[in-house]
Each structure stands twice: as structure tokens, then as C-alpha cells.
Image 1 (cartoon, one colour):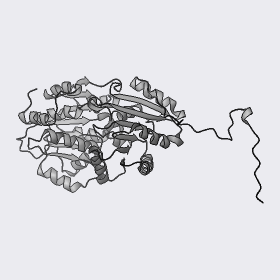
Image 2 (tube, rainbow, N blue to C red):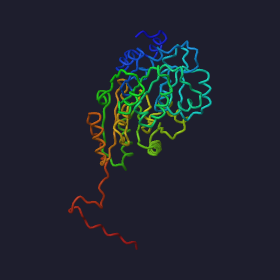
Image 3 (cartoon, rainbow, N blue to C red):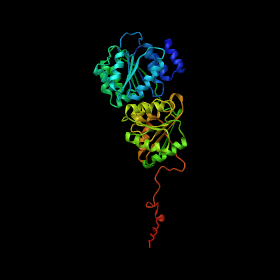
Image 4 (tube, helix red, strand yellow):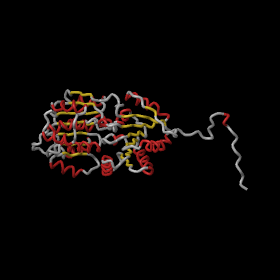
Length: 394
């Protein structure tokens, strides 16, 4: 590919040997300078797929203090992870890279921008804040990237994304990566990209070779009991337990923390300092069980996750794909379990249709998952007996 010596040395240090499928097609396409749209699941090496071309193409001798590349991401956690990847691959250069996201005070970010930054990775809302303040100027921008475009649009960032892209130079190169190419993603591409090359590296289903997928039928009142028994049986190396709501995350994490060690919770209402601490601990392998919501959990990119547990079945099928995609990454094996209430059969069927794969039913020996029949609910008339007389206290 004709990469620089500095980049090749960094790739060697990072033990990048054989490129993944998305890397093998996206990198050469992006190095042409043309607009490229790639469809690929998380955990397939897509960050390096756009980071390598950017590091190869930007001019490190540029005198301007304004950024040459901008990467928009849906979550704070993903912003930090992408920044770390850039810095790892640019270790032999003088690259200045900055992550911009909410929950951090503006003044320090303003000072860093004034000092000069080559690459910005940020959430659309915080990037827009700096543009409005005049602390971030896009006049020198050469490359704009939309990472996890479908998720950014799902959580309402479209107005900010469009404003940012309209302010960027029309001569820029645009790169877009998305796990799904939904109509709204296509709409953004048509509007702000110039005849992009489209590369489909998506898996039509979640890889059955690397991720085993099971479901349990369980009464909602017995889900926590099932969780404890499942963790005891599986003994995960690291697991993410997904809940639908922030309140659900807190409730499960609090109860789980009293039963086992090494439990943390993460959701959008946590202060940024605590979110950073939780994620640093999880990445380092110090936290074994992470209870998370979809919005935050989607930005988690940790290779050592062995188990995914859908404590609450996801509301949307694509959320299932993204949840389960946290494990079985880069060829590693993983397993996913989904708790399904008796009335949630339709949701399970929709997921199976979406991934074109049937989930296998699992059971815990000695645990039915459904409430036992009480004495007030006899199975048939023969089982109806006269209740014993209450003994009178004398």
C-alpha cells in the first residue's frame, strides 16, 4: 500500500499482521482520495480501516493550527477508544490528536485547540459547541469521517451532523462506516458524499463460527435468580450485562454487586469522570462484570469480552446485533445469552429473522425459570383437597 516507515513501524509494534476483511478493501479505496462508504460490524477492525489512510494522507508539515481530519462518533467512550487507536498508530510522529465530548469542561479543550490539533475525534454535539464558540474551525479540513453512522442518526445527531458537514470544505474527502445501511444513512451519503465507493463487508448474520447464541425462557420476577445461576455455571472471563433502562442498570448492578465481586454500572447519567474510570477498569480487565445500557454499551470495544447477557431483550433488532457484537471480536470466541419472558416470543422471532439464525434454547439444571404452581392453583380437580383445620391456641 506504500505506507510511511513511521506507520509501518507502529503497525508492527501493534502486532497488525493480516488485515481484516474491511481493512483489506477499505484502506486501498480510501488512499485513492475518493469518498468511501463501508458497511461492517463493530469488532472487525474498522477503526484502523479509516485511521491508517488518514495518518498516511495528512500533512504533518502543515503550518496551520486547524485540524486536517475530523472523526464523528456517537458516544464519549468510542471517542476515547478511537483517539487511543490513532495515538497508538501515530507513536512515531508528532501527531496532535484531541477527543471532544460532553461531560468535560470546555476551557481546557479550547486551550488544546488553540495550541494546534491535527485530528479531532468527537461527538457531534460537543464538536458543534466548539464550532459555535469559534474555538474549532474547519477551513483546513481534508478528511471527514462518520463512524457508526447508523447509531449517530438513531440517537438524534442528524441536525448537528448536517450542520458540521455543511461547514466543512466541499473539497474534503468523506468516509462513512456503519454496521447497517438504513435509509437515513443512505440519505446522508447522497447529500454529503460525492459518488462514494460502497464496500459491503457486513456479515448477513452474526458469525455462528465465533459467537454461540442461546436464549432462556424466564419469568421477569426470576431473571435475577437466573443471572446468578448462569454466572455461576459459565464463570465468564469478562461479561457485559445489557438492560434497557438506566434504572434497570442501577438496580441489577446494585443487586449483583452484593452477590459477586468486580461489578460496575455504566449509563448516560453517570458523570464523565466516573464513566472514564469505569471504562478504564473494564479495559484493563480489573472489572469482570459491566452492566450497561445500549447507548453506552455500543461504544465499548474490548477484545477480552467472553460473554454477553441480554438481561432485557432489546427493543430493536439492530440493538441485538450490536450488543452481541461486543463478543467474538477479531476471531475470538464468545457466547451470548438472552432472557426472554413468556410474552416476548414475538421479539425473539424478529431477532432470529434479522440475523437469519435460530437461537438455541438453554436451561439451568434444577431451575425452571417459571414460577412454581401455588397451592391456590391446583392442576386438576383430583388435586383439590380440604384445607387443614387451624389448631386453636388454648
